[in-house]
Length: 132
Image 1 (cartoon, rainbow, N blue to C red):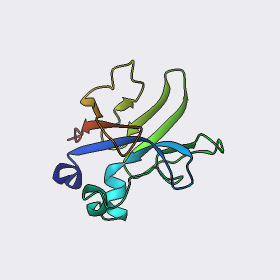
Image 2: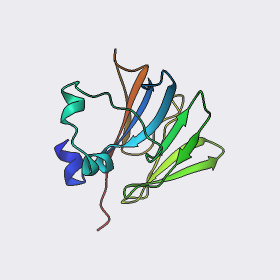
Image 3: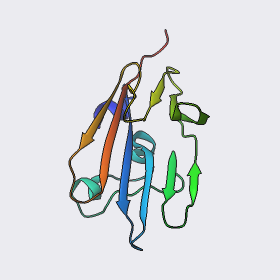
Image 4: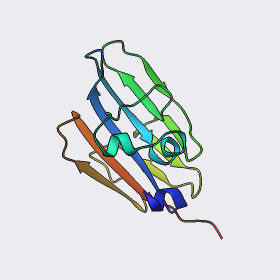
C-alpha cells in the first residue's frame, strides 16, 4: 500500500464476484485511484466486499450486460486493440496486458490471489519508471 501511495507502484485489481443482487460482475480497479477516494480498511478487515463499479477502469455486469470503461489519473484504457483489453500507465507510458495467456508487460507481474469471498481476484503490479 505504501509504494502505491508514493507512486512507485501502480496496481490494477481484477475482481470477479457476485454482487448484492446475486449478479456476476467483473472489472479492473485502479487501486491507487480507489485508495484516494475511500478507505480500504473495511476491505482489509473483511467488513466489506471489494466489488468493481461502473466508475472503475473497466466494469461488466454479466446479467445485464452493462459494460463501462474509464480512464483514471494513472491509466488509459485501450479497449479496441487486437490483443484485447490493455491499460497504459500514464506516468511511464508502459502498457499492461491483462490477458492471462500473455505476458503482462515491462516492469509488470500478474498475481492470482486465492479467495473465498470472490470468484476470482488477480493483481497486476506495475513498478513505475519515472522519466528523468
